[in-house]
Image 1 (cartoon, rainbow, N blue to C red):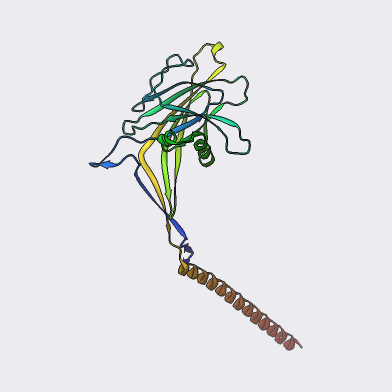
Image 2: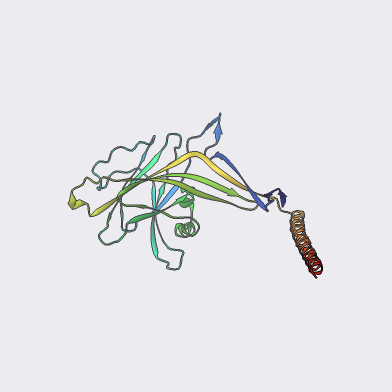
Amino acid sequence: MMIIGHKAAYLLPSEPSFQSRPLEGFPVENGSLSRERESRIALYPGKARLLSCRHHYHDYIPPLVDPGTPQEGDCVMEDVTYVGPFAEQRMKRAVVVRGQQDVRNKEVIFMQFSHNETEEDFSAITYMLFANFSDLIDSANKSEFMRDCERNYSMWTFSGGFRTWVKMSLVRTSGKNNEAVEFRQETAVVKFNDKRPESERTNQLFFAVFEWRDPYMQEIRLIVTANPWNSVAILCGVFMALFKAANFAKLTIQWTIKMRKRHLRNKTRELNQIQ
C-alpha cells in the first residue's frame, strides 16, 4: 500500500480491467460487424397460455389485432419439463424460445400471453436468459440441462397488463482459470390499454419484447497481480504504520508528562514566593 498525503493507493490481489468488444458471433469483417448473434429465453408461464410469438425488425411492432386470441407465430420453441433444483423440488415446465439474432436490423421478439387471474393475488411470468439456444438442442439430457441453468442463472419477471421491453447485453468475466458469462438487461414498462369487452377482461394479457441492446459485449478481465513479494510489501507497510503510530503515542505521553512536571514546578515556585 502506498500512502500519499490523505489519499491511499492500493495494490489489490486481483484488479479488473474493462473493455468492450463485438459479441461472439459478431466477427469483424471488412471493418463491420456480422449480422447474427444467438440467444435463448426460457419462460415459465405456469397456467398462462402463450398466444403468439413473432419476430419483428427495426424496433417496429405492428398494432395489436384482436388481442387475447391465439395468433400465428414464427418462433422456434422447445418445451422442457424437469424437477426444480432447490429444496421444494417442484415439477416445472419451461418454454425455451430461440431468441433474436439480427442485431444490425434491430430484430425483436414480441410475445403475448393470456392468464385467468381470478384465482391469484399477483400475476407475473418468470423468465431466464441464456447465451446459446443450440446448447439446449444439443444436450443429451434437456431436463438436467435446465436444472443446471436454473441453479446458476438469475431469473426475472414481467407483469400482466403491461408491455415489458427488455434490452439485453452480455458481460463476460474471465480470470486465470475460468470465465463466466452474465446477462444484464434494461427494461421499460408501458401500460396496456385494454379495449376488449368487459366480459373478456377476466383473462389478463402479458406482453414482452426482447432485443439486443447493441452488438458489443463488455469484457472484464481479472488481472492477478499478487505474489509473495507483494504480500511482504503489504505486511511491511502495515507494520511500519503500526510502529509509527506506537512511536507517536509514546512521544505524546512523554510530552504530556513533561508538561505536567513543568506545571507542578511553576506552581511550587509561586507558593514559595507567597510564603
